[in-house]
Image (cartoon, rainbow, N blue to C red):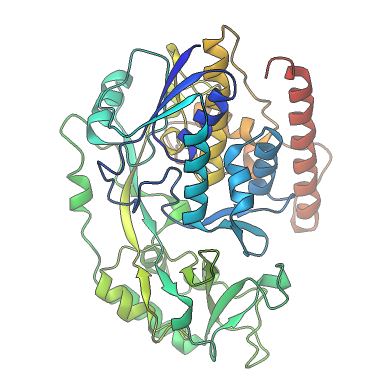
Length: 453
């Protein structure tokens, strides 16, 4: 039986391992935790969700929803595990992060073709390999990748949101509702903390004056052999205090936007709203949506307790920042996830430049498929560019050097539609047509490839 090494037991590595093992490949899955910590993970389970517990929109006419449906159609293990551990989140797919990771770990460990090895891989093996070591790749392996690629690493700083206990939320002020009434529960899937203009202004001022944790400790994790290509934040996951710096009302038009939400105490739309999303199946923990932060812990407690309804909030986890590393994929990878000059070396997950949990899972799935096909003497698959996964793989392998940044699933990656006008009036229709075209393209591809998948 052919053998495959997979480095990293995150979302991408776990999905890749399952897909390859299902295709009669003997997989050695290496995960350095818990022996070696990353600074962001908290446990030893595979597929741990470090940031949000939401996998993004689950709506069929939204780009993240299209990608999830593609994953389901292609037999994703992690989508199956997400469905079994889902928690209420309106139109999004959110999970109990601990039960999700535990379930993925159990499924991987139970597979007869997968050997889970708790050990750090410090250099790139000569054998067939998928590198899915994620944004927190160890320094030793980072050095080995830099030596192989001949490229400087790009990296950005990412942040995670605080989590509070539900019993500490003042429900005399906060209220349950989903935007525009979406959600399975009549009362709504989110807890909302409404702000008046005065409360919002005081909150923003306090946040801008608060102290931040220095980033030097993260920079020192880079050994001299790996140079930093960029010191930047990823635009899709900005710390809340950085957003506030861009203008006093920026948060009110961003993560604190009040559209689709009415305060039952006043019958009016608030000036701003802080939303909290359920973080575990028991419903005892809630995370602050969009509140990635690098404020010092005492300042987080002080400033975030200024939010109406969180005056006595108990923090189960404070927000943190960590260094995320990714390679310059346009120069190094093919759309098959293969390294540009080595057929049996693949990359998958956030280290490739895809962003979002579903994107990481998806590139892991494709890398697992193609690694198995390569080892079995078959040609690798390149998905159609009008599927969401195909479009994401095309973007990260063809983007210009001037503006390459991690990319989430979005309809802007897909080829343009013919005969559909632009503008707000046609937006919903365009999304529906994009989704249908992607579905049809994937189905046609899979039907044509069914004998070899």
